[in-house]
Image (cartoon, rainbow, N blue to C red; front, side, top):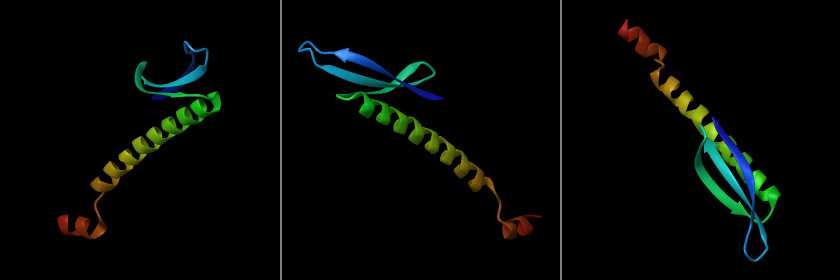
Length: 77
C-alpha cells in the first residue's frame, strides 16, 4: 500500500519548499518538491490514487484473460 507525507524544507536563501515523499512499505519510491503546500498535497494524493487504480486494473486484466468464453468452454468439454 502506498502512502505519502509532506516535509517542510527551508533553503539557505530562506525560502520554504514542501517535499512530498511517496512510500511503499516504509521505503521511499518517489519524491517531488513544490513551492506551495497545497500543490504538494494534491500531487501526493493523485499519485497514490493513480497507483491504486493501476494495481486494480492489472488484477482485472489477469482475471479477464483467464476467463473462458462460452464457445471455447463448449468446445473444450
